[in-house]
Image (tube, rainbow, N blue to C red):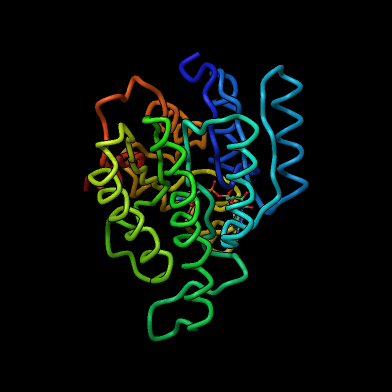
Length: 255
Ligand SMILES: NC(=O)c1ccc[n+]([C@@H]2O[C@H](COP(=O)([O-])OP(=O)(O)OC[C@H]3O[C@@H](n4cnc5c(N)ncnc54)[C@H](O)[C@@H]3O)[C@@H](O)[C@H]2O)c1
């Protein structure tokens, strides 16, 4: 029970890595508040966690809507009096309604929309949660970036830019807010077997074969493997870790 009596906010908890993290954080004793646009998925995850005897509350919310983020943070603050963990996880990739492309082919409105969802959401949540953590003199913020933020992988410049910026913000927030006993760390997943990846594999069936081949561990990652990393970073077991950019990619970026 490494998160006993802790209050954790997770974005994008209705699916994939966020869902695995919501379940694990709750099993480890946290009250988990998770936000997602997907109402059906969110309600189902809440039910699953509650049925298992743990505490989770789903909020339907668009992470790129700052007013909605402010309402959620205020509600959590008023109800629980504290926020110990923020996992900025929600994001969109290939197959979402916005086109991922290189700069010449990219549509400017799609560029803005992708940055709004993948990057501005991280700014909004962190901006409004940090004052609570500063007041209580403790907190752990975990940002979900991507291996795509570490290397020059062509074809999705807005995604790459959003994930690269999340890495930079992790460092600057760790340096700025360490004095308040707030740790800020970043996970860079490789190819993880979630609905986001299923969409990619449906679009490019050949990737089913080559993705494991270009990964030293020879397989896709499991959402639970990201959740385990997030749990470690959320807990006091990672008490001296801040500003770290942790690859969880089966060795993909080690090559
Ligand atoms: N799957 C991978 O291979 C992979 C690799 C690297 C990084 N990532 C990152 O991991 C994170 C989680 O992705 P996943 O693989 O679990 O994908 P997923 O699609 O299974 O889950 C993403 C969740 O975010 C939610 N979401 C999307 N836009 C939202 C919005 N505007 N408001 C609220 N919720 C929104 C979705 O509804 C969904 O529940 C993302 O940030 C993604 O970029 C994924």
